Each structure stands twice: as C-alpha cells, then as structure tokens.
Image (cartoon, rainbow, N blue to C red; front, top):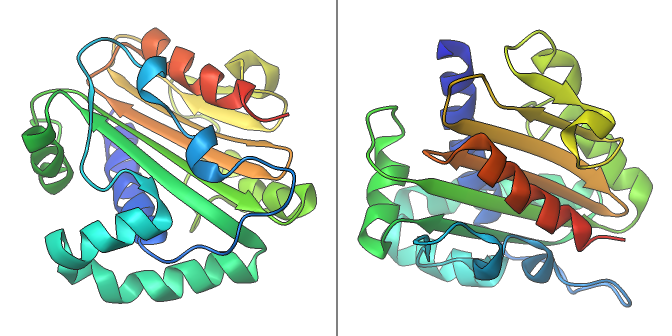
Length: 211
C-alpha cells in the first residue's frame, strides 16, 4: 500500500505539470480531449469540479495565478508531449467542494480528507504515437512493465478499459489508478477516497467516448 500511495501522489504531481501548458489545435474528426475526460455526469454524487478544470488553456490560466510556482516547468513538459505527437490535452479534477480542491492537491498525503478524482486526457496525431506513450508511461509513471507485481494490478481486458490498459486498485483500499490508450488518446484517471468500483465506472465512461 505504501508503494501505491507514493505512486499515486507522484502521479498527481506529474499530471499537474504536464497539463499546465498550451495545447495545439484540435484535429479534424476527433473529439477534443476536454470532451473525452471525465464529465460531471460520470461521477458519484457530491463531487464538484475544481477551479481550472477544462482544456489546457483554461488550466494554464488558473495555474498562472493560483499555482505560479509550477508555471515555468510546464512549458517544457508540454513541448515533450508535443514532440511525442500530442496535439491536445485536458485535465478535469473534482473534489467534495471547490475549497477542498486546492487543499487536496497541496496535501498530497493519505491524511488528506475527502475525495479527489483527476481525469487527464492527451490526444495524439495518430494511434501509434498514443500507444508509444502508453507503453513508456507519462514521464515513466504507470508504465505497465514497472507496475506489474503491485498489489491489485490488472491489465488488458481485465481492467474493462481495453487491451492497452493498466489499473491498480488494492483490496480494501480507496485508491484507484488507471492508464489506457484507445485510438489516438492516452487517458489517465486517479481517484483517492472513492470506492474502486465507482472510480472504475468513471474510467469506463471515459473509455466509451473514444472509438
């Protein structure tokens, strides 16, 4: 459980860094990342959207004022993703209340009260590019080859998210992480404080929007 907690909290930091940079123009014929990411209607009752949720431009504007210490490194993070073929991205985060959003992100500890769900979606110029990022993980986090052997890991069709997918949901825990690639999209969902079946249901709804 300790290993999983460290992975979860590290991943939240990576998502925040990767997401805080301008996106490219949407590709023709595919939905924007913000429409694929978790939507309010996907969620358990009581979760509220955090400030800044939406496409990358929205999150960047929020970060410039609310989390300015993270602003500078994000430009390079986005350049790295663009070099890997990314054309668009979105981050949707939810918590029990808007004030709780900042506290949960800042605490990054098992002692933080309440529920947090973060949905991060990156769209690439083609399926092959998305698949490469899935296999190596975003900045090495949730790389399938590295998380094998972690308690509660499932892969492929066992996750309910398709063949290129990995999920971690330890028995008796209230942590759920999933990363999956479908078509030209790479999607990650992190949930703390939710029952894993409820978090998995959200991930399945995100996956269903990608064809």
